[in-house]
Length: 214
Ligand code: PCA
Image 1 (cartoon, rainbow, N blue to C red):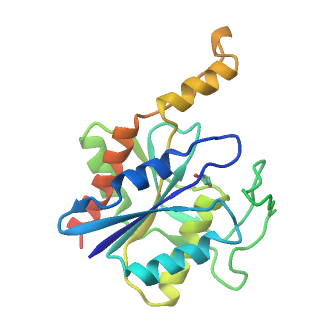
Image 2 (image 1 turned 30 degrees about the vertical axis):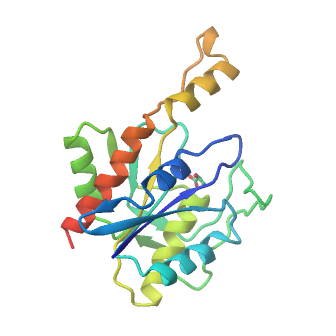
């Protein structure tokens, strides 16, 4: 009875990624008789989907939450849908790949919905004082990629496992560091942030709500 939780390694300009810290921190924790197994995925278009498939085959999880950093977003974003696009925007991946307007699975459909109960998760977070929203785009980088490709894989294998993606914001330390390096002392804006403990609690509750709906 396993809950699979993934985060991502640091990428781009970020020398830390709260999603990796949360995944490592929750590894081994129990929720309603299930044990979380936390893993950190590479930020590489060539590798992520394959590593996720191996994790699913190895752990046969009851539910899957993938997570990553959305620096600049406020609060927790529970993603509704993954789309069939790889486009790195201005941030090449950690192997220097720079896909532009590519399909993830050329013969597959345009999008897959997350099968986590996204609205119920957001309601639960808001009721518990955690800023959160449903998001209708996970972008076109690796966070969208892992959502789309994992959902496509689960469908093709007829595995009925709730799976979704949660974007986490910066931590206060990350936001302060960027403001220090930028123009924060001259009046420039500072990125929104949430503490690691609140981010961790959000993921715990994401699993609780998902299991309650099973
Ligand atoms: N965030 C990026 C990729 C890895 C991560 O943590 C994204 O939002 O796609």
